[in-house]
Length: 195
Image (tube, rainbow, N blue to C red; front, side):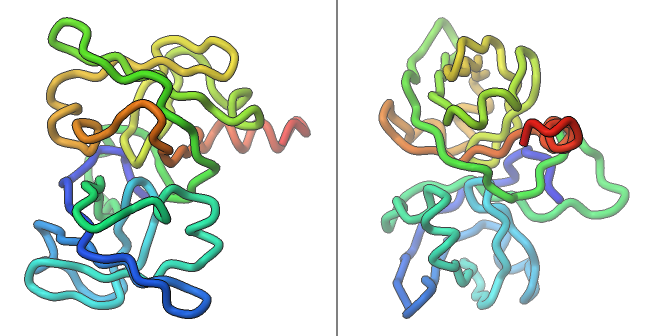
C-alpha cells in the first residue's frame, strides 16, 4: 500500500530484457536503507527489490507489467517517481494507492500557468467512469486531485513543489503515464455491476 506522495525522484540505470521478463535498475537515493523484498512504487507500479547496492535497486518486471504500464518506455537516465511502501502507523497524506496500474493515459497538455502548471491527461474510455471532479487519481504514482473532468480529459493543477520534486518536470505532451483509479471507486463499480 502506498500514499501517492512521491518520496524521491530516481533515474533509470538500465532496462534489460531477460527471456519472459526484464530487469529494471534504478538509481534511488534511499537504496542503502532498503532490504531485499521491499516494495517500491516506480512511477506508481509496485515492484519488489531483488538486488540492492549502495546507490541503486534492481527489480524483475514481468512482460505483462511492461505491456500494461509505461515502464517499457523507460530509457537510461529517465527520471522516475519512487515511493516505498507505507508502514503501519505512518501518516496517510495522499490517498490509498495499491501500486496496481489500471491502464496508461497520454499527456494532452502540460504547461506553465502563473507559478503553477496545468496538466491534462487523456484517459482510456473504461477508466473515465471511475473518475469524478475533485476525486483522486494516481498519475505515475503521484496522488492528484482532478480539478475538472470533461469526458475522457482530466485536468489537474500542479503546484511548484509537486512539479519540481516529481518526474513531471521532464514530461511532455504525448508521453504515456501510468494511471491508478481510486480504490473505493473500483469497488463500488464492481458492486453495482459497472466493472
